[in-house]
Length: 106
Image 1: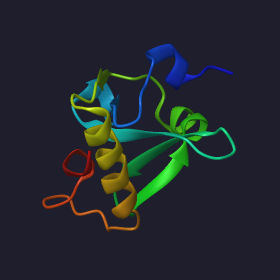
Image 2: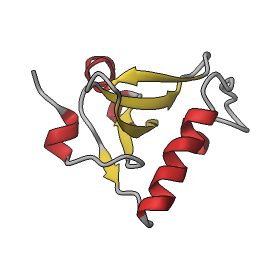
Image 3: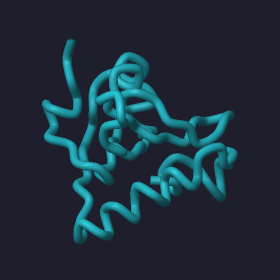
Image 4: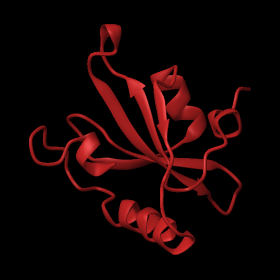
């Protein structure tokens, strides 16, 4: 099984960008959170028509396919930790196309 985390050397707080429309005109943004207590790689994303939720990297890859870009988190270890905690605090926040879409979240 392919691992987007290993392939892209993701660290917690890194932004994952994947195409959401034909020709990649619309992009979807998500945040890599790190591993949970069971060793699963987790990703937080704000899903259109739903809310901010956490999914496994395996599920995210199955639903989204290829990665367009990885934006590395720039900051200290503490800032990286704070970014992950912020993403977790936003779980269940409803999606809003104008005020709180996936890019706003990430």
